[in-house]
Length: 307
Image (cartoon, rainbow, N blue to C red):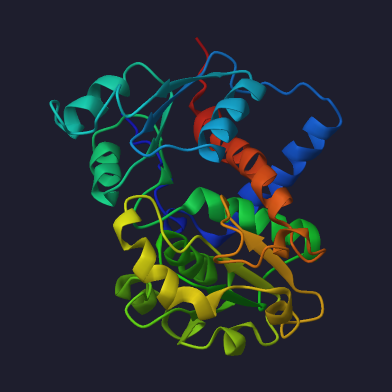
């Protein structure tokens, strides 16, 4: 049996494959905008396992499968509980005999790697504590649509060195851009990803320094799911890292601002930032749908075989 290809991290594909997926996302978006019916995944089923709740991830994957002619099965935290009761490996062996792909949104990244190791169908990382690669596909597609190739550009990540930040580091390697990360002391991205990136990534404590001349500025909430008890401490520490219109004024003239949402206005961004013409957060959110459709087509369509 041919082993399935998975999408657990940006590093699972070659740079050319990643560019191919986001360019395909642009094409699929155009087809949808023109009302063209395109159903290459007719009869295909995506299982979606959620250990963490989600709005955009669920809607984009479910709508995407339906638009491609397939179907999606939503399994809530109450329905599955990875590894509690049934070993992850056993669940993977059983489920992958019934569906054509599995998307998992979980806490421990090891849940994903273990599931993928025992799955005969593609497994997609819908978010883990380490990485959020599907969001980066959407972000890269959005930059491509608004500004062309991101190669050689400068990107600033402001705030928590979280799973999104780790995925931005992987994207810097794969899409060949410079990344500046501004975070408070003790909230750096993973040392593993920093080592991987070498001199592509610069760490700083000064967000104003980080955004200087940047072509893309991105941020995320200061307190992620599961960190609620640290919220007050984080609020105080991260206050100087709020992205404002004035901060964007220090960036390149053609800067665009992204936020993977949900946003807490008045915390990581100023109240008015999403209304700034430089913000492309709504396009970015929509592109979760198109980029993931391209990913699903890439992973699932080749599995078609003549009867």
